Image (tube, rainbow, N blue to C red; front, side):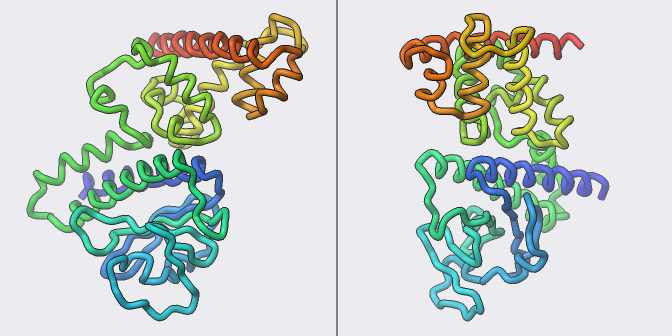
Length: 307
């Protein structure tokens, strides 16, 4: 019973991390996961603020996805491909392998009357939903097969390894692989900076396995994306010269590019104008700035491993 209690805690934390990543990706403030047990939805986890009875009022059409009949309901639900729009939310059923009905429902506050996901957002959403479905299937195994404990233990251990992590970094994450020594490390840094405020290249970044990121995640209540953003921000701040900030002097150039482009999210044209340089020169200097961040992250990771 103790092992089952720990696994449930880990599952809850994992699903919270998935929701946080989903909110960051879609830039919305509220999302939830409802688990369907015995044909009845029960609220499992919430990111943001949610009305208490929202999960209780979910229409059956949101999880009885193969039912031919249209259920009676007080609030209209509209289908848009593999998503639904209902009561100010976008809903997505979570299907288990070989199951006709959903094992859960993910809802995010609607940012538009109909789902308007970009191709990149859709890829990220599919990845996160697949992780949530796998986690809920793990839960079903734990609840339904007491006589097969030997089969359940690997599932529990897998959930525990996933705790605080939104994405696996392939088999390398389980083999002691040193991320900072990878040939693609600088590319991963560039991708993470490019998706600093949310996106699949942040939520699925191999940088999540850095020890320095793990420590920052603990300091942010298990939020891995906040942890990675904090580490990137620290790396950028290490490149900040002493004294009062100046926009056009050479010693401030790399820091200003990183701060304006990735942290503040300003357009290239605006940055070039503020730094009094051409856009082509800005792109060249941006590559140098990203390289500086990558080198700083390597130093930070080595410092963390040395503690």
